[in-house]
Amino acid sequence: MPPVAIPDGSGGVIAAWSDYRSGDLDIFAQKMNAGGVAAWPEDGVPICKYAGAQTNPKVLSDGAGGAFIVWEDARNGIANVDIYAQRVNSLGVPQWTAGGVLVCGAANNQTQPVLGPNGLGGLLIAWADQRGVDADASTLSGSAPPERRSGRPTAWRSAAPRAFKAIPLW
Image (cartoon, rainbow, N blue to C red; front, side, top):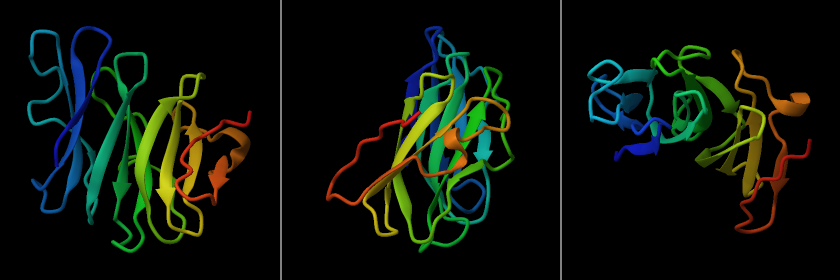
């Protein structure tokens, strides 16, 4: 799977990718400084190494030299793909629950996550959803452990074909 990368705010980049080094597809991340030197362990930091495939990582800067990483996760089977997230600090240390925080674990598949800042130091996540709606969204704080705004995982939902926008309601 091709890596995804974002600027780190200091002339370097933070990249995330899936690979098979552990047998299943797992998520790893690496920070490269402006000189092209790895700032985290040479083979990358494991973000999620659970059974089942973890794929399609997306990365968003946390504004502090680290990143939010969100991915599709099949740890509960390929017919029940969920969305998970992890925050990594500027040193490459995961800040949230080992293996990531469940963003949406509803029935059927949740896929194709997209990210944006929520304006409060956290992130807004939207995804395609197969539980009878086309798209869904949630927001997480940047704290450890992260908190969902409004206390529920679903902040917005659309049943309209191809509707894929997220509007925070708070």
